[in-house]
Amino acid sequence: EIVLTQSPATLSLSPGERATLSCRASQSVTNYLAWYQQKPGQAPRLLIYAASNRATGIPARFSGSGSGTDFTLTISSLDPEDFGVYYCQQRSDWITFGQGTRLENK
Amino acid sequence: QLQLVESGGGVVQPGRSLRLSCAASAFPFSSFAMHWVRQAPGKGLEWVALISFDGSNQYYADSVKGRFTISRDNSKNTLFLEMSSLRAEDTAVYYCASEFRYPNYGLDVWGQGTTVTVSS
Image 1: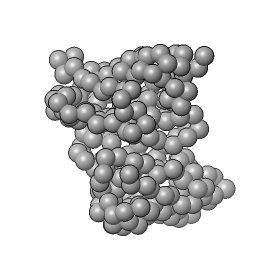
Image 2 (image 1 turned 180 degrees about the horizontal axis):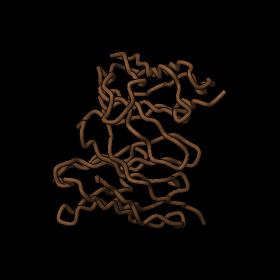
Image 3 (image 1 turned 120 degrees about the horizontal axis):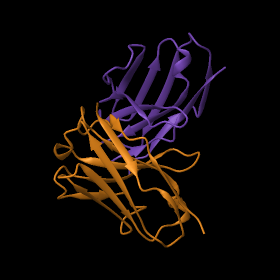
Image 4 (image 1 turned 180 degrees about the vertical axis):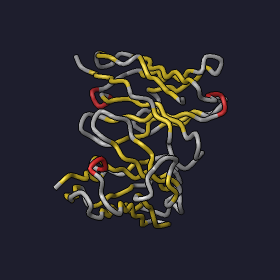
């Protein structure tokens, strides 16, 4: 099973700041990596697929990068609605999720 | 508007069974593989099972293999998850989801979830 490790566990930032979230895979997933945002009481929302492609309707401030085992989700300038929990997910070998990064308003 | 609606959750005793349903609307259900994903209270996401578009292939997480069965009825646009020998650790919100726009890359259509509580 491919294990995804996200860091940091919690990120405290203010609106307007830049957020950088990391996801490391235990073995290469090439570009089969997605990012999700989840808010309390809601289903996850797909942000990024294939490591660097924004899903339909996702604002341009969200970007993804990386390949192989190391991936990054960047939010260029935080909007108040961006706070929540972010998960990475690999699709190279079935599906596994990272443990999540909580992005909180400082 | 694409929509997936889960139902069937509830409180069940350990060792008992429960069947979840996921009804699809405004969605070409019979053309797409479908997934179940769960989330225990206060925890992260865990993939549970996958069924191919025609129902001919099913795949399971090790944690549920042999106890859960995924199936579908394409004539009724409905996905199922039959859960047996339930354990306390199966307590979670269960979501159905699809890789509609990005097959094999990302789950972009999700239901709202149905809650399963396994407790005596």
